Length: 111
Image 1 (spheres, rainbow, N blue to C red):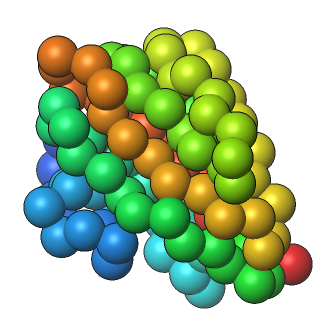
Image 2: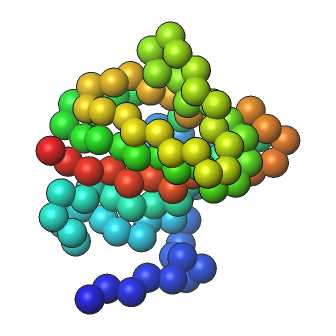
């Protein structure tokens, strides 16, 4: 069993932009096939630039704020309650387009 309280987790920078902060609840190796479970905070205007992962699914669940998830030439609005799954190899970019912080829970799963 593992119990993690997000309030006690230190924030780290995300690999795509260290200014974007995340709190990692689960890391690779702790649960089979889970590369990471984290909550990322995007301040207004912050962007995790376009990237892809060859062997990893990413599930993004917006819990606060507003933004856009760009996948190729398609833009998907993010708002509280919206969940989007990005498949391995899909180019994607996250951007906070709102006036307040956007919180996104990210579950990364390896094939």
